[in-house]
Length: 296
Image (cartoon, helix red, strand yellow):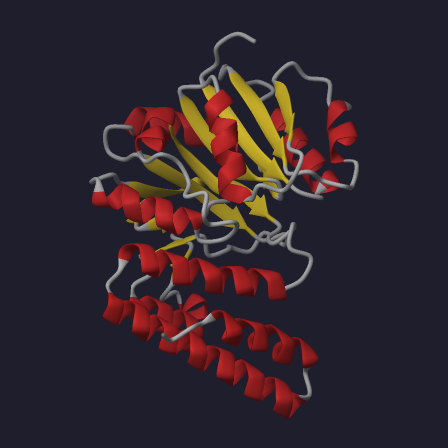
């Protein structure tokens, strides 16, 4: 394959149809573009015939890597970067649908302004085209408190979707554009995080090195959300584990202890609400979450 400008990296896991639809939307988006690109799909040992379905997409830009086991989101993305030929990287979730010419818009804006920032995120939309909060402030203890107990996402305290170009602390891992050299300087995603919180850790490290993260609302993408998770219990537990790991890695003992207290309290509230409302999902989910948090 000839060298290309942009490597688009997608991780799939038992998401045959939406991965297929994602790739088709990328191809449609770039059909009249002058951008030279490749699409790299890292399949994490899907059992739903994903590989055979993707092989029916007959375009020279598509490269498929099949793993023998599920390596997780971060490790699979790092795997894709290692074989990427583009100077620029676009990480897209498999449950993304590219709208109009959003990739070209985003790419051109990045190239025109790349001295001003290092990472760029697009505007994510729900299936009904309402705005999906997809960037925010760093996960400090007050932000986590607002997220857990104050419906911080609803009030725009923890996550939001700006209407204007904005410098932010993090952007959603569902849509990240950067240069390969920046990603490699950070040594990629932390592979100890299996799923969820990878981008928070990445951007925390990026900001420590003085890198800048921006949100670009003119490039829009539908993000279906949690397509590989099947149920809500799994992502909640992964967020718990991700927060615990992130704080253990980057913060002091006292901050870790306060985080654990908040997570314990959130789990306790979830269990109590579940018992009062006779909701087995809440009981089972937050009992598992409770057991994940060890105060000492």
